[in-house]
Image 1 (tube, rainbow, N blue to C red):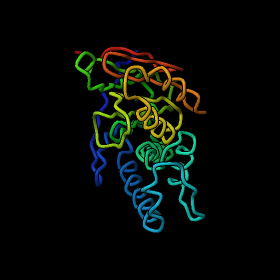
Image 2: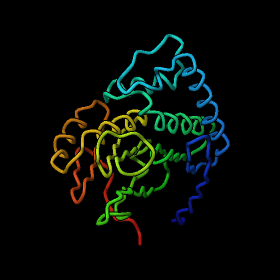
Image 3: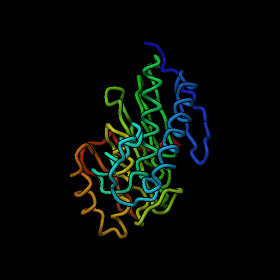
Image 4: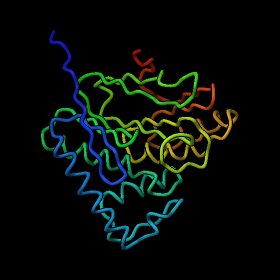
Length: 233
């Protein structure tokens, strides 16, 4: 049996987005990110409320595909469409690479990940807590992909959150939905007492496969998730 090949990740920064990409069609991924960002910015310039809305919003007739994906996810999760932007961009870019002939594409857009893998992938979960910091990970098997794993936090990163959740991670087939649902999950958790209700509410969103929430020393799991493991030392 051949040895698993070592993956090589490359970083691409565009405006405020920092992406880690593993794909032999790297240039396709990069070009699609730039193209979709331009398309979205042109739409926002004509319709600024799309960017500022903190709740689902009606689309204009000239909305491009990326805005439609974001708005659809936002309606299901009950948040503003920009809560889905990183996930939507990651999936569209990965899909472009796969359409161009890539057999594997992993696009991590600031913690919002879309992946199609041919070998197992270890996805680390940065909880930001003292007890669990850098210890948890999902072991994703090729047959589970394509898959998205998107995270939000009220304590880490630059994304907007109205909660105090250390980590809200959503697993779904659609990355825009996973991203939007992660934002909503993070919004719902301010104390450890909020975790159970948040798990139940988020799992009711059609299209969400699984939820992981971390608040202080509490870890809540619901639905179907990849195998949870520890990160290598």
